[in-house]
Amino acid sequence: MQRYLWGTAYDHQNIKDVIYTPDDVARDVVAFFAPSGRVLDPCRGDGAFHKYLPAGSDWCELKDDKDFFEFHDQVDWILSNPPYSIFAKFLDHSFDVAENIVYLIPVNKPFNSYAIMKRVWAWGGIKHILVIGPGAKLNFPIGFCIGAVHFQRGYTGPIGLSFRKT
Image (tube, rainbow, N blue to C red):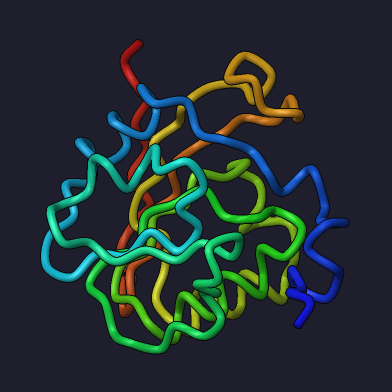
């Protein structure tokens, strides 16, 4: 059976979706948000986030035949660096399974479309953005500002903003 990555054969995946998180960034993001309870890394990749998550944390990784879109258990936290080309679909599924979501993304991503913003605010809101730095400086193939964006179910307060200390 041939595996598919969000509509395309896995061997022909969108190479822009394979962005490995620098170890120090993953460590700092996990330390900043300090997830607890049941935690999931939905796209483990090389394990940068997963190794800093609490012991026993769940993970998905398509190349290991653990597709996030087939994960339906409820979790307290999701932390990861999601595929940017299907961010809206990924976020929607995250809303179905998590109370808190922290995604390392270009900070403009949740604000790029009115439809995404409506879905975010219908589910909850953005609680905090930890600004990491420019994508190019982090070896990401984009120059946009990268941040760890914390979405929280039912949150209606202001958006906090912090800058990572480097």
